[in-house]
Image 1 (cartoon, rainbow, N blue to C red):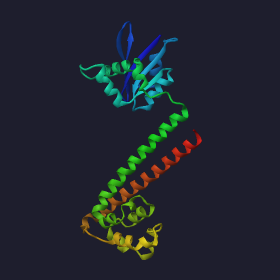
Image 2 (image 1 turned 135 degrees about the vertical axis):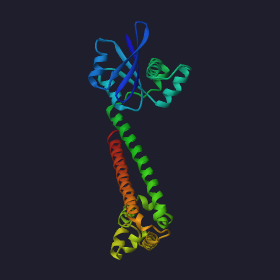
Image 3 (image 1 turned 90 degrees about the vertical axis):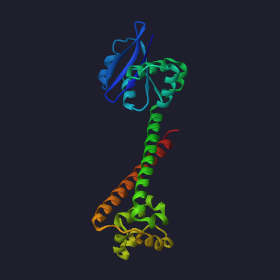
Image 4 (image 1 turned 120 degrees about the vertical axis):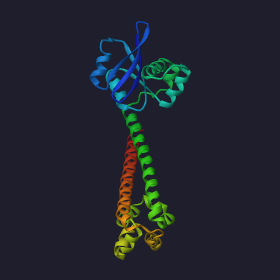
Length: 257
């Protein structure tokens, strides 16, 4: 015998739908290993198959650890499937669970579910997701930094947008968040800030960093400096996170075919 379960998760609970006594009933399971095991207790040799929407890895692990066979459905695929399974009625946790139960009972839908992965493959999937999230965060941080610098350091943005993702660019901006700060640095400090650039670029970049196209009111100067430095630090962190994720992903791929 097979017990088919559709599990519609929330952060603190799961609403499940399953067949019992010839009809579909629902229940609520708390987000705790003991609660999930208790719900499945007394099933004997019955095979338990759970259909659950992706998005919360812990819920997947809780059901799997309790002995269930788990099929994870992509959210977009789940919504498309809903339209084919039922065209009317109010949306709700129970109905979502019933739809997921119907999906996991259908061989066609199970083929579209996420396959059970080996431990290295699951680690690869997690690392890939971390790398993608890190890259998205990096793009967001670069966009936010570029936005503030277009008002404070417009000449630098025009001269080298690539500077925002380089060690020297972030170093220079932290030392000199405004053109006035750059011009106040000694020649030695400016040279140290531009360490890592080519000799042919340094004159152009130094001029761009010190070129003030807009004036900043004295009352706003400290706030502007703080804003630039906060975005620079966020960018530096995002760069380091992206690089670390890529390195970990490359190492894992090299160790596992």
